[in-house]
Every structure is written in structure tokens, then in C-alpha cells.
Length: 198
Image (cartoon, rainbow, N blue to C red):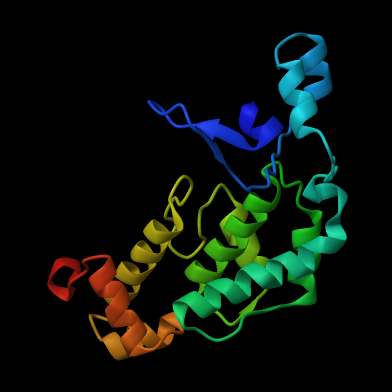
């Protein structure tokens, strides 16, 4: 409270006040005014953090942002994985706009990244997203992906590709849309060896 009010604090065991120069940005999905009224949130804290309020509607109420966000997430994932820029068909964008997104932007981000990694394609269609949106299960592998992290999904995709191409890493890299050097980095990252897979 003192930092918010005066930008000063005292370190434990030190009586000399120290000055800080920070800006505090806080976010919530709760009704803080109602919580103050019901005495479940400190009123003095509320008035210290409630200087400027920005209301950000949920993603389902601003579907015009979805194409830009999807492209942004796909571009970042493609860049970090050393693969070609990903495109979306108009049907894929229309599909993404129709989703309810109870998890807001994080849900869109996970759906785009998961679909990109698992499909291995440079142009994503509605069928690619449908395959990943059916309880996290792919039509090709029937492997349940619900609850897995992106790293775990990527690791499983690489292992499946190695099995499919009998350990031919050139074919594996090509199928995944990455260079052999990028594939070797991932094999090392996930401690995958051909002998363990085949």
C-alpha cells in the first residue's frame, strides 16, 4: 500500500525508506466494486489501483480481432520453429471467428499453435482446426492432446514422424516443415534418439 501511495518502502531490517519508480498495471475478471461493497476486497487498495480503468471485452465480443491475433500467434510460432510463414484459408478464419473462446485469447493462441505444430502444413484450413478442436484429438493419430503442453505436443509429433518415416531424418524434417538443423535441435531438446523411437 505504501509503495502504491508514496512510491517508498523499507527493506526488512532497514529503517531507511527507499524510493521506487514503477508503474503498476493490474487486471481482473472480477467486479471489484461489488467486491468492495461486499467487503471481500480492500477499499483503500481499490482506490489506489483504480486510477485509470480500461474495459477489455472478451474475445467473442470482438471477433474482428481474431484474424490479426491468429496471424500474430502463427508468425511467432513459425519464427521460433524456423518454419515457413503460415497462411489461413478464408474458411479457416471464418471457423475461428465462430468459436466461443471461454478461455479468451489464451484459448485462441493454444488452438492456433497446436494446429500449426500438429498439422505440419503451411496453409491451415478449417478441417485442420476442427481436428484439433475435437477435445484435443487429431483425426490422423487419434492421440488425445487435451491437457498437453505445446512442447509435449511437438515432442509427440516428432516421435510419430520418426516412426512414420522409419528414422529417415531428411523425410521427417521435410514432413514437419523444418530444416534438418532445426530438427536436430529439437531432438536434443526433447532427448529423442532414433533407437528409442524405432
